[in-house]
Image (cartoon, rainbow, N blue to C red; front, side, top):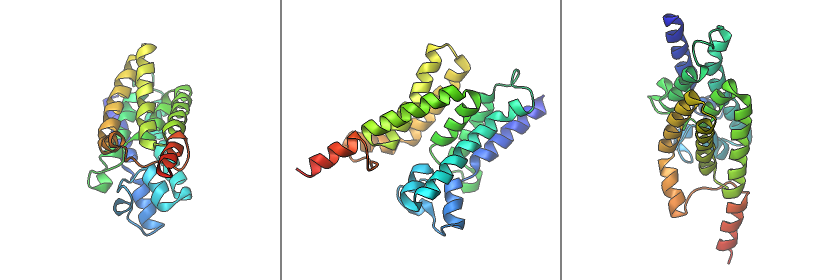
Length: 209
């Protein structure tokens, strides 16, 4: 069992470490996404700098990384002994501190969502709905991401799902830390917005006065 756990942790970390946005930008679009837009290799910057198709692919693969990593205990038939969330956590670690990107990485949002999808699809849907609602309200992907992961942490506490609460709490901390520059821009009113939603409408209305 010990070696199975170690093996799952290593695989989870390596899966999470795959720098999807970086590799797609480099090998398909011949662009270094780290030098474009925000410099982040995640989904949002991919959408903004490489386009919709690339963004969708990166989003799908980054979610899949977390799902596959967290599904390992199910595949091996030991999910009753080894909690999938604890294994999946290492995928998010890999995503933020990637061995393939000089131990840099993304902000762990999509990969964390993938972990949740493997563990509890219903909560994944809830998180997605919260994300979409906040995105439409604020027009900020960063705000929607932070609220979404925080909501899962709060829900886990409310339903007494303690392991989920611990993992979600850790991931909430990671996501907030990785978004610290976004938080600063939100507070100063300079955060980037998508071109839809209430926040975007109000900003455009204010600027056009």
